[in-house]
Length: 136
Image (cartoon, rainbow, N blue to C red; front, side):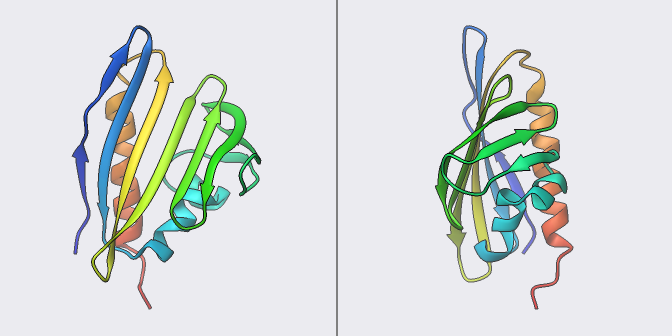
């Protein structure tokens, strides 16, 4: 199984943009979760996490996006980071068959709308990274 990225509905309300992506990943949730919920995992595809306390209410600082807190946390399912200046990034992970998973990614932020291609490129890096991992 190879991964794929589907563009969801994108919305703009004044200067606030909400991007949605549906990312089908060639690995089970247990292998994907560390890429969404650990400093090392995020650095491999999204951005460096200078601080990440993996729990609801924990501190988070994402390079280039800002510092804030973990605003949703359900182990191996949901990680949401709300950072000043970078908005809200939500990773919602679901099982997709026996060997795959689906990531529903939402990024709500203020600023330039041209960020969409950069977010898609990050999703492509995640697919490539996970496709290269051994399952056993």
